[in-house]
Amino acid sequence: MRNKLKMILSALAGVLISMGPAFAGPNGDVRSSDWQIWLQEPASPTADRIVAFNGQLMVIETLIVIFVMGLMAYIAYRYSAKNNPVPSKTTHHVGLEVAWTILPIFILVGITIPSLKHLYFADRTPDAEMTLKITGNQWYWNYAYPDQNNLTFDSIFVPDDELKPGQPRMLTVDNKVYLPVETNIRLLMTSADVIHNWAIPSLSVKLDTVPGRINETWTRIHEKYVGKTIYGMCSELCGVNHGFMPIAIEAVSKEDFAKWVKQAQAKFASDDPKANVIVRLASAKVTR
Image 1: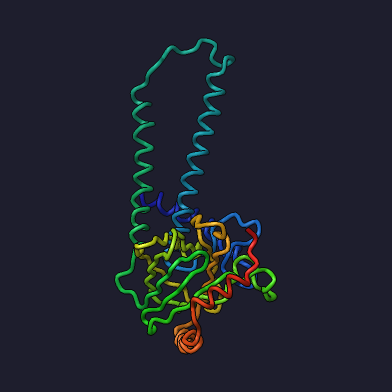
Image 2: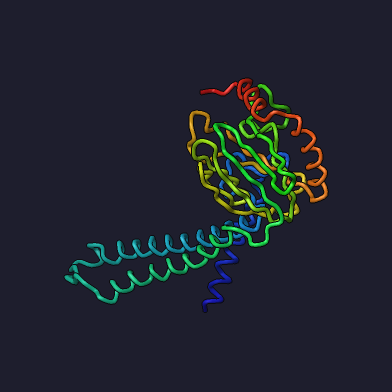
């Protein structure tokens, strides 16, 4: 019985999950689209699990709503003044009270167990192949690749008047994060000033960057996203320009990632990161 119920829930959840790819952003980018009614397209193992779990919860919630609405309709009809002219004087029913206490407990336990499994799965990876360090600043991101000779650069919002054709408004940055697909990537997050939040919905990554503290999580981008840009934003109210801290990840093959590292080391080695930040922030026409 338990296996059959699990199969039914998984099948129904699969129908809902199949809606996800229909909501990929324009040009194949992985981001929200107009009138989207479902989660973003999952691009990592963690996101796969979260989307599947969300679908299962939707099925459970729908069944509960149908049951409660049906029960209320039956009660309204069965115990109306017309059908029940002599009202019952019953005030307690031990069996019913036990049932409506025990059944929700079983439902919550059934939800809690897989939920905790997903949380532990998303926490960290024991066999990371590379590390990306993320530092939040007011109001831009700094990225460091410790395994690539500590390659470091800043990623700053591009204002509307500097956008090129096809670049999404409020999501485009001057320097994207390049990450190889099918690679276990350790993500270390901290902040240089206030609390920020590095959130990528399609990767199911959403973690605070806290001053004086390093938070850790991980991700692994699916191979089919090679050549696509995965978008996110800061999800913590970090100041007046909070809405201008987008995140853009370019998913590439491992070979292309190695080529990019060499190019990036040459490009950013001659730049003064602090001077670059000052110039870019001064030129950005941000609406306050």
